[in-house]
Length: 271
Image (cartoon, rainbow, N blue to C red; front, side, top):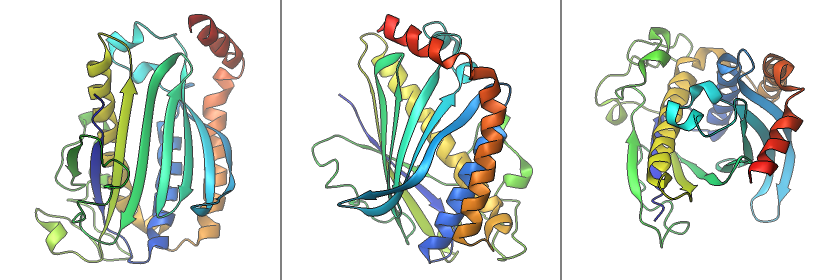
């Protein structure tokens, strides 16, 4: 049985959700650029406005995530030397949907629903309608006190040490959620599926851990980079996002431009 996880990632922000949205877009673009190198990382395929009859106006993005070297040895043994995961996201902030699939692994998928609220993670029923018939495990993320993988640690991005010059926020200590204002929570319902006998549990547990680490690192960075994005308007961050996407694609795509067709052909043969 698939056990979705409800992840609560607390992050300080202006009460106005627009400020958080700007910080989120800035963080995703800068983080993707930093993590992309030597043919691995995030390639932006599509990024354009999208209108949904139920959720209204939003933004649709499609990305290819190349990450072979970041896989554990047991996973690298069963995938091609070069492969990518497709990320599709529909952002109707303060509600978003993100899906991950891999053509080489047709029975693998990740589905993430996100809702944002101005509270400290106190809404335990926020996903009742979406997952009322599923068993869930609740995972609470503390951006200041939870440990991150050592290879990702930077003192300048540690909320316990960082203090914002523009907002005066930080340094965050134990119990900061009860004493700091304003505050916002990012609620995420994460569902992982990998329907392959013998590997299902192992893969699903591994992916949940990776997703948790990414959310923790990303929200720590959004807080630590607040002085970089705090004065931005929505137009400013969209322009920054466009420039970062172009630079990141150059870093990633030069190595893969001649191999994508080979990857897809290999995936179809394997399937």
